[in-house]
Image (cartoon, rainbow, N blue to C red; front, side, top):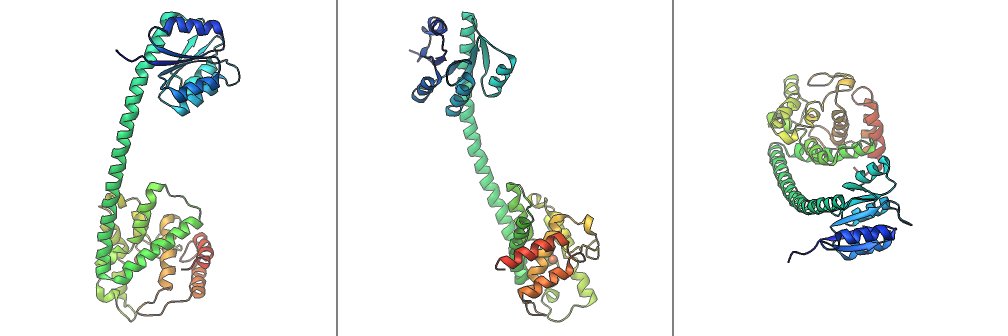
Length: 336
Ligand SMILES: [Fe+2]
């Protein structure tokens, strides 16, 4: 025999409770209460399918009871019942998850109809939440796979940079770290799903050096004009290497403009302050600071104090003064 559905009824009037009983008891298992706490006890113990809740019940009112029931099991289908209905309470109840509304005194046919609809929805709801869970698992799976694809793409690109110039590769990863310190200090918030892409792009900002001759990259002495011209192509080369990689497109301009200067005297386009994307202005400070703090073939590393003084000197000319302000604070504090 088909198992009967469980219906919860909460009403403080004995006469109304009896009407519910008479109309529904043959077809359903009824759990009838006059107040909220007892009703919640039934929800805790039984698998309730549909709840019929009077709005005006003592102690906990119907709206509060509706919320607590939905919190315990959001699939329970709730119908609000009242003799003092106002549109506002109805709207509020629907907003909080009730699916229908019944006026007292109610018509038995209408009551049965609304209970049947509740059961139908309960069945659909359970199915939907099952599908939802399935969907969530699929989504998580896809995200994990996507994450793996992303990180292996970045690893391959980093390996290519490393093969060309080990300094550029380790420098780039450090610059990513420095840039994130600045982003935090500047109170900028990246959406969580973009954080990783941002870090990847920072790590790959010098990828364009793949297109620059090793002789120039490793040269110990000063570079001549022609060599400088070649070096100065790396932001454009980098941006064009990364552009076809869809997931890295978001911060591509950071790669393209990381050698622009605040006063418009940088490269590749000589963009001024207002035209350089903020992310590129931040990366530029992190990049220069790390370069100053590193041993290079043509000079030894600068100590922290000197490097910070250089940043300060460049504020407003080479660098965005706001970013320098953040850098002076954060690079002084952390062990970099
Ligand atoms: Fe660069």
